[in-house]
Image (cartoon, rainbow, N blue to C red):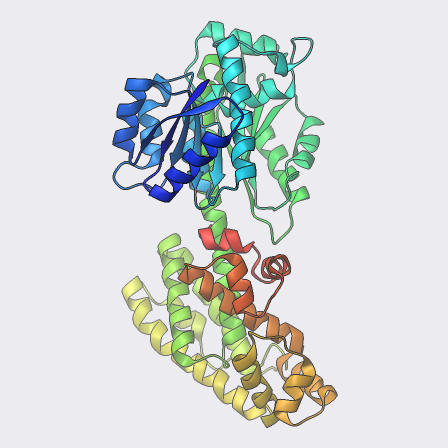
Length: 494
């Protein structure tokens, strides 16, 4: 009988897991409950349970901090994390701690029992051969996918001896004592997102691969050249990705087998930094897109807040000179949008010399003062042009969409509100907004969804319903198409 410790600060969760354990036929019994990390550590030393369900978000010492204190001292214990959300920083901290898996709450009975069944197999293998290999690694005792998974998701993150490394080298059919680790991530909902990457890299290198959480871990054995590895991985990621999918990779240095942990940690750190930078760049593109869409249409306070949020993010991400250059590019785009120059080419000079004015600024304080008045001028120009060129029926239709976007809408509904025919209104959208009714409605809904996601407290399904989508899957696909990332990724701020 395997003993189980449940660690969670929520009493309903403790009771739920305990109830499921009592009725399960898989050979587990409840050893105890802990409501914080300190209680968990004390219980571990006193009772040494076989399996631990560990919540992450707990007051005081959280679940990952608790694991960092005890995981190396209890090598035979299987640790399973539970959390209310999935995040990349969770993977970053959990990988080196040897976590077997993690559950996203609320956990169904089916998932809970499946997890117990998997844990039972792991515990039996540990019991049969501590530090050795098991029958599941391959019928002939050589190689096998599970050997790669075990090595890359657990043992590579631990300090090892020369003897332990030689066992792994033989098991994985590796003929070199050196190698490097690469960690890649692909923002995709597809479960097989790494298969094509493995296929492409296998044509050029001998690799060992294992998925772990939402990452892919690659081991390149031998005296590989770092520039060649990086070039091949980045080219493969570019081939399998698309503009609306964020991908990244971190690379560790060439190390002897017993020192591969250092290569893995280097790769993980670089992957994290690139992931953050990818999110910064994508976030910048999204904010610029929204500014351009709303210029001349949105509320002046809303636009000012959006613009201020954008430039503060840019100046906090880039060196001043680089941020200043990015602002010059932004104002060039906004000036074209506001004046209509992008739709009606003209040889007239721009209304303002934004490039010259921005280039003369030498500090963020100077920029803040200048930007406030400059953006107000630009917004005023855009509003005057919109008011001058937008027909009354189109203004009425836009106001109707703004008010009714959260329910099913058709072009005919907006046309009735504007007292014109659907065909005539469709032409107005095309001529004056360079868009369609459906595109305008979709952009508005997704913008409102962005606001709700940033506000927190609602599930993706609830947000979808609030912005007019009854099908959450269709909403997610539309959100990714418009925004460039999935709603869950947007929620994590990556």
